[in-house]
Length: 468
Image 1 (cartoon, rainbow, N blue to C red):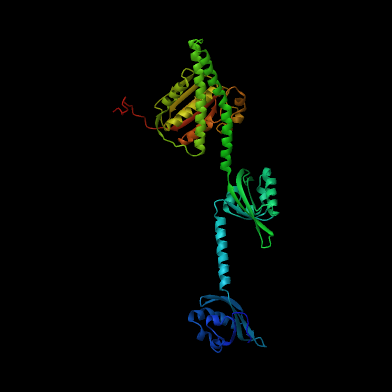
Image 2 (image 1 turned 60 degrees about the vertical axis):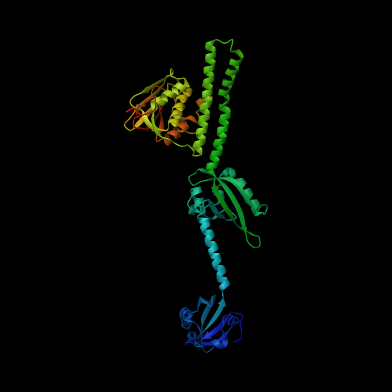
């Protein structure tokens, strides 16, 4: 048998005796033609090798070709065995071809491990990932992208990127993809919107690269998609807040500066009652600015989840009285309280809640305004009612949204931030309560909220100690 460039080629008979052996790889393994020919498999190789190889040798002698990997001497060999038949078709022997595939198997194993790492990082990535065909069809998507778009993975694979892209962002997306395919850019990043399976819109930061073959031909896109909806909402909120502040601070600050200038210029010529009137109007405008700034800061803390609640037993009627005193409204608003009105609530939050509801009633309602506080079995209930026009029915679903005011309030003389009722609800929810709106049968609006009832506070002495 002439030499081959394979590691080894051999024939063997039914006794598993090597009839002929040749190959360039024998010497590297400490084997030779002379050491193998005339010897059986059992004579030459260790027991563990025989145990693995013998069934396959006999399988070939039974007329069936086979291929297996055989470890030997720290290497891996691919062994292919095939039967040798005589003219009548009977198997008389078998032939084997052995090739060292150690490096090839190591490369294949490394590739499998790399593919597995890619699959795991792809499937379990905290942001959306997708492999996209050149025509936009989705080839592979991960769970994060499915969650972002509110489609199942199977539903996404039946769609294209174009199908789920917001119409206003479609042309920009196509333009960047075309430039990437043309080789004008290596990758691109953009903010875009997707239409989800539920019909809503989400914002995402999209990063895309293009995979090419060794010849440079485009194969498919790799897309990474990060949900930035919350960030876009915060940005919009900030823009609204800046616009609101620039608009709504101007009027009360003009009142403050106007009356202060008038007092400075005409103090000696003004009567005492005129001075007092101007100072009261200045104070009211300053309170308006203070309330606006407090509401703005509260919204900022709510957005950042930085608002801390410190619940404690608080007399709701006491806080309501303080609010009316500070606003100078004790003569224009009726405060009624029955029973012990101690609630478990953050005192600062309660002050802001009552302030917002009372000022809201005075701005958009009409006198008489009544604050009614009563005690139920396990809660303290508060109602703030006015005799104004009430809330337009079409606006009721948006009463507690941020930066919202009805058309009637926008066109009226009173200015507002559109934050007051939004803050009322958010603060009440944080304190274990809630608020609702009820139109009055005879006209006017009533806002009612409840808080968890607390044990009555013990009276205190002047030194702050509990009286026994």
